[in-house]
Image 1: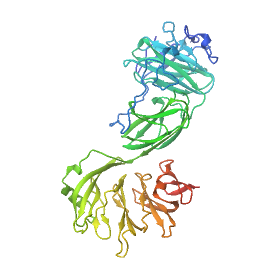
Image 2 (image 1 turned 135 degrees about the horizontal axis):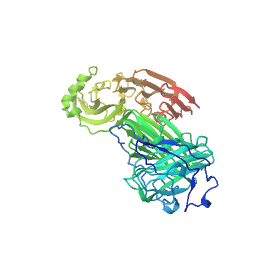
Image 3 (image 1 turned 45 degrees about the horizontal axis):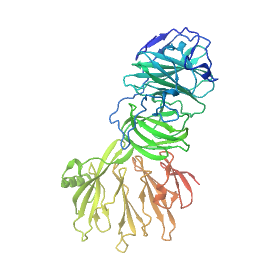
Length: 570
């Protein structure tokens, strides 16, 4: 009997003319009609490499997931996995056919034991480095899933390998591996070349248990999605930053794996939908295959992923069927941190002096600082900015309510104060700051004869690029304010709505896009909507394709957010 090492290879001289049938408890009467009993030729001598398959990526710091519960990768169970339950379920051992260890000599491919499809078997390994070999005949094309439930012992590591038999050369080829660590069940899949034989090897990579059994099942799925095979981390499909995926769970043990990398701290929006009868889950795992979080089907969620590489996994708790997955990263996002009330916990008068020095183009008039309060933080393209409210008082006002606020960041940057047509003041406390973008609508008494609510300033300032886009507009009714779209703005663009309404009630809202890096603006008048909420209630197809329904003209608009071009309107 040959033993396998971590990095070594061994040569098998394969002389036996055929395979042994399962003895004792697996009787010939139990075999299905698709099983053929003997392979007519000897397998050719060949070399196998049974070192561990690379599943871990380069270590990255901060391998945690914020705001989500913890989930363990499926652990070994002392009993058989039930195909009708979750991957963590237990089952009585009487459900499996016993391959009697003392009677079996299946320790090389030429002594492989022929098994049925879709049947649970149990066996043991009695020494470190032992291999138990099995084979299965696949009569029709499909996806073959090999599932091995290992023993529940942290010092024992069994691996699973599958090969296709080339019946011209009689060599085993197209090796597929599942080589997790101890106490983790092994699973893999292959799209079959049928009819033909597949060889399965269970290898004692580390330790053994001559008493407690491992369990093996070979499942053939006649229908499967184009993403297969992807049943373990070693077979994971590599996915880009933004992607949509239509997949299926083709058998009760099917698991669909993906690998995913973020090059900076990223907020990732996630949506898993399933219209079938089954219950599907989406898992996030780190590079060490530790579960970080799980989301259920048919709901929108997000995860904040620190820079690094991850695995995604779709699995079924019960049932089979199709699903749809949307993954949409945001490279700018807001969060709250534990920071003092001023940068570096400085004296408020020192901060006020630094604000004036950092903003030479801003007129602060006779305002004086009263207090500073931390508001929130934003990450954009890997750069963090913290923001604070500064409460200020306009000292020469005859009015009592001359206290207002400005927002400044950790570079002490801010922008022009509120101009109400009488004096420069702070803003109301309900200031909008999202994704490093400040916006606010305020009344402006432009003329002595005009009412304060006839004219308005729409204040718009990008803290990351230090650009001010403030505009003036008329809205006598006060019911059609300009607005910033938090939903469709991101690290590359600012989307905002402008009002184009008249005194007779006619008109509509229109869109403007600002390129955050260059400041270039696009304004269009052919995308119509009645109010702000109507536009914000739309949905994303991708990072830049957005759909919403307009009650203004009854059309559903499908638009490109990077160009504001109308892709369809019907």
